Every structure is written in structure tokens, then in C-alpha cells.
Image (cartoon, rainbow, N blue to C red; front, side, top):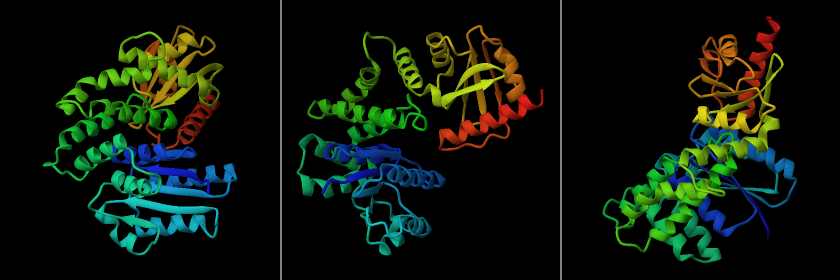
Length: 343
């Protein structure tokens, strides 16, 4: 039977490792990532929304490297209800999920293996083993359950840092691209497995591996390649991300990082836009312009800030952090409406 898989996993090496395993065995997969807490509930709601839109039979919701509380597990089950087109599965290794596992047949807990290994062992027993994938799984397992005497432990530590420090793309705005970025780093690491001192070689090459993902034509600095790639993603989503303030057209991003470079590059390649605005989880906001509007005035009016005509910033005291870009944009558009209404 052909299943549509909706895979929710953690945001660390083990979490993306689980998804990398699934990616190697299935094609009809949509990936979601979450930290603990409220984000898990929001991501789960998004999965159910996507299943409803797809209107397909034979769906699996797979959760990995995330343990649920008893209340969450009950809530997740209730939201599925008696829908026979959705099956729920969870693979985890955190001891804190033991009570939840004991009360739910769809919950697989094994504290002696990391979630990536649990996932790989389950599906490889059905669909067959893969040498490179098996090696990566053992590397992740060695570091995730901290087997410091394992021969793969040092390589696992480098992989752990590689994923933790891969922050070039914002996963809230660009979740699919970010997942592909993580997969690319994991797949490129294969070539070092059989080398002498692979952990040192891998660490030495992470910068080049990142550039390999972001490079589309000619070589450049990583910063410039990342900026160009982000602008490419923004161009695809610009209609959704467009805002307007007093007749000036702008684009709104969330935790974009390198706002100066990306903002200037976006405005240069999109002459119909007047300003660039990036909001962060810390409630700060950055504005960039390219001579068409004085963003120091916008910063003063919207964020009690200021600065230069083409580069300004401020803070949004009433901003509430979110795991959804749509919620972030709604807050900003409401703020703009309130300010425009006062003039």
C-alpha cells in the first residue's frame, strides 16, 4: 500500500537523522521540525491541515525524537478521532516518555538507541539495509546517547556541531529548503567515512560543503552565496510576504539573519520594492532601503527606533514570538493599520 507520510521530528542531529532515513526509503513524504512545547502542537495542527487539503487515503503521521506528555498524546489521538485514513506512529528514546509509551500502542520507546537508529532498524528490516546510511546511523547513535568509547564518537561530535551550526536558512520561513540543506550536509559527509581521521577531515570541509549546497553557478564567499540563495527563496514567496506602509511597498521577513546583506540584495534585484523589514524573536526589527524611502522615519513610527535613511532599527514591545510566519505577519499588518489610522 502506498502511504503519504507526514514526518515531524526534532531540530537536532538525531531529529534530522530520522528524516534522512525516511527520505532514503520513501518518496511521498512531507517533513516538519519542532522543538518541545507549544511548537509541537502548532506543527501537529499544520500536519492535520495538510492532510485535509490533500484529501488522500492511507496517511501516516510519524513523530521521531520527540517525547509526548500524556496530555499531548491524548490530544493528538483525539484530533485524529476515528479517521481510518490516518495512522499515528512515534519513535523515541527519551526516558521521560515512559509513562506515555506504556499507555499508547503506537508509541515505541527504546532508551538504548537514538531515534535515528530506532527509525533505521525498523524500516531497514522491511526495505533492506544501506551501507552508507547504516554507517551514518551508527555515528549519530554514538554521539546522541554519548558512547564516548565508540570509534564513531568523535565523528558524531563533528556531525552534531555541523547540524547545530547550520543556521544559514530560517526554518520557519523556508522549512523545505532548510530540510534539504540538512540532508545535503549529511549526504556529503558520506565521503569522509572511510578516510583516516574522518572527524578532522569532515570538520575541515564543512565550509566547502555548505558552499556546495548554496552555489548555483560561479563561486563566491559563503556569505554572498547564502544571501543570493535567500533572495531566490524570497522572490518565490514575495507575494505572500509583501507588506505596505503609507503607500510604500515592502517585504517582511522573520529571523532572516544577515539582514543588511540579504535586504540590500533583495532590494537591488526587486526595484518595485521600497523597503525591507526583518523582525526577530527578540522583538527587535531591522529596516533597509535603497533610496526610495527614509526607513529611519518608518522605524521611529512603527518601532520607536531610528537610524539612517537606508538602514534603521527598533524594537516591538508588544510583539509575540511565534512558530508561524503567518502569525508574525498578521501582527505586523495590524501594527501598521493602527499606526496608519493614527495619522
